[in-house]
Length: 272
Ligand code: SF4
Ligand code: SF4
Ligand code: SF4
Image (cartoon, rainbow, N blue to C red; front, side, top):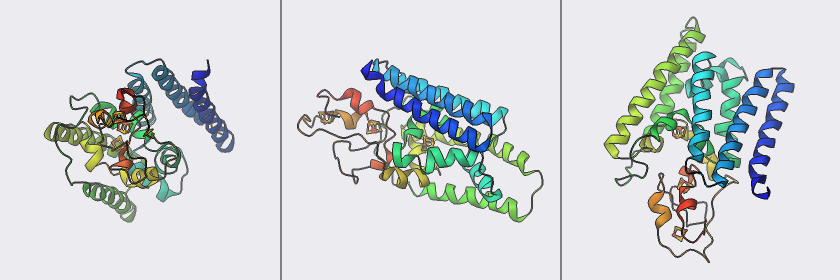
């Protein structure tokens, strides 16, 4: 049973967050929400320990579908970046702002870009595409993320400036249209650049938060240099082109690591 300590600890952490928010916000939703996510994460980690090939995908689909279908479409909660700006500007510290604080702004200080590997509903679909490892050299297009980030901010700011009516409805429709756009652009880029995660590397506005915060992440993969034979297999399987054999924080594409553990699984010397 010792090998299941990690999923048990993760479940306890999520339950602690669930109970703390339930009590402080006096809202049973938070107990359900964080318990569900905690169970999904603990299940994925347990399956990984049992060497189930699709362990990460199980968590990604459980959490991604829940957020997209239940929170987004059924509860009308805009969990995209526009929803974050909207709730931030209205001063409401509820689902979308809590979600961003936990998963995308402060959480990455602890668990890096775990969100991108195990929960994002955009990547949940992109990861079904055929280019799991990039088949073309990386492009210098990372600047696009700053444009999409700024555009989302201007869009929501403009709605406030013109005192748009029925903002809740606008936010719901911007969630639908925004997601459709993300999927369309993400799938087009994946096939154009032969890289499933091209959208994550160049376009996704959330990486403006994720990248600098995950630079300081406590949870990171390290390489045991005494075991490594420099075979390069870890780099070949990496969807994000991270040089995981470099243990420094400045490792190439270090802030792109989504903790998918493909490198760990493929290392013939168990050096990672
Ligand atoms: S980079 Fe953006 S689209 Fe990609 S997994 Fe992360 S949050 Fe999702
Ligand atoms: S796969 Fe393992 S042995 Fe090969 S380079 Fe990477 S860490 Fe070293
Ligand atoms: S370095 Fe390893 S864990 Fe990180 S993205 Fe690449 S393959 Fe996944």
